[in-house]
Amino acid sequence: MNFIILLSIMLQAASFKETQLKQARVKVAYSEKEEVVKQYFKNRGLQYKGHNLFLRAFKHEKILEVWVKEEGANAYSLLHTYDFCTTSGVLGPKRREGDQQIPEGVYQINHFNPQSNFYLSLGLNYPNASDKILSDKQHPGGNIYIHGSCVTIGCIPITDDKIKELYVMAIEARNNGQEKIPVHVFPGKLTNDGLASLTNALNEHRAFWTNLKTVYDDFEKTKKLKPVKVDKNGKYFF
Image (cartoon, rainbow, N blue to C red; front, side, top):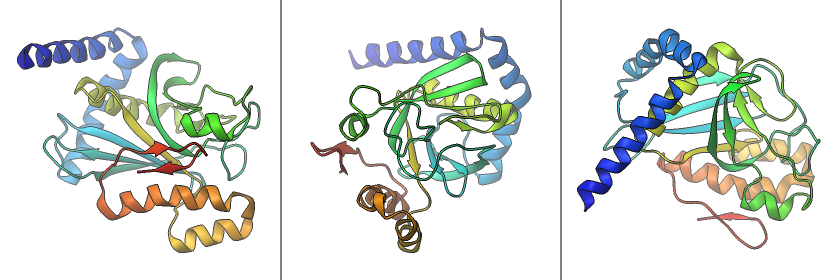
């Protein structure tokens, strides 16, 4: 039975990549960027096949980190870093539709869009369980993506050129059976000094950012991802 289940999962994974490759922009992405991506892995001494993916975004620094975990490995390794092409809103979480805020919190990729208005895009599951508690109950907003182009009203754009690379990595991870690709979005790097600097400037978010720091600190210490839960007050905990 276990073998049958495994075979079924492998066939489903293969069909995902095959379906994506039927799309013209995905074909272009693989044609232009797969060897570039493989070189990133080679430069870091990491195996391309069989990797899991994890993304961390920092709004203040305007960077998106790409972390990978090799097959059989326990911890993640930093693979590559992308710059935000532009940004919108201010530091602080997204709390309502139309506020132009990039969300902050613990998310996962829940949508691959090969026909995006912004070339290619990877959707985040905003609003998540915490956002549904802390944000506007009727109009929290949605449709948050990491995407191409260089415009945004709450998403993370990294240009058409770079989204091709990230999209290839995400397909490969999904094709390897990684159903949930985690994405952590922080206001900035939440070191002790970083948090102090942010909260001195924007004290209204101190409690939320202090809570987010527990997620940041755990990964910084272990380079592993623990399951993150949300309590009745919208706080993250392990």
